[in-house]
Image (tube, helix red, strand yellow):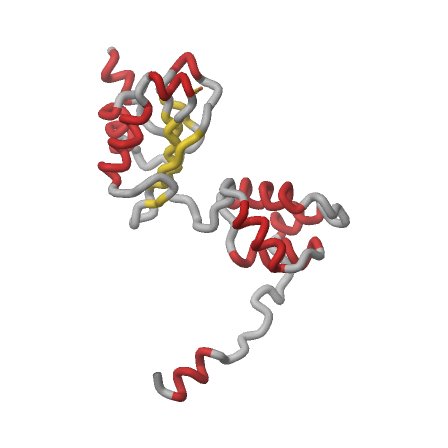
Length: 184
Ligand code: FES
């Protein structure tokens, strides 16, 4: 590495969050000002809003709520409910609760991993799909269940689930329920 390159690498770039947080993030954090036991709750709310915890989100949490940055990073990385990469356009969640498990949701998960060429909790390189599992979606009578963004697809099969993803019509949240075709 040339001297010039190594010098550039260590140039002080100033405070990365010198600006105030975005309004929506500021509103979330403001609700927890002065609450010393609200760190996890605040992180959950930030993730619910953005879909993930970015590095600057964590910095704003630390600064605004008065926690050491190391503690905020430590808490966020300790709990596996937190994710640090932006989710794909379509969040695909395969239910692995008991009712879905006995109705072969594992085969659905394996098939989607195979067709998307990703593992659980990964996002396809084109940013379209993030594949996750959930414990129970509260729709056990429809088992096995796959949820795409906010839409619940019931009585899925590996083929039907894959067809549902392929049938995404460009709408951000709507998928065609391939089981309707398959079952009827
Ligand atoms: S176990 Fe899958 S919805 Fe309840």
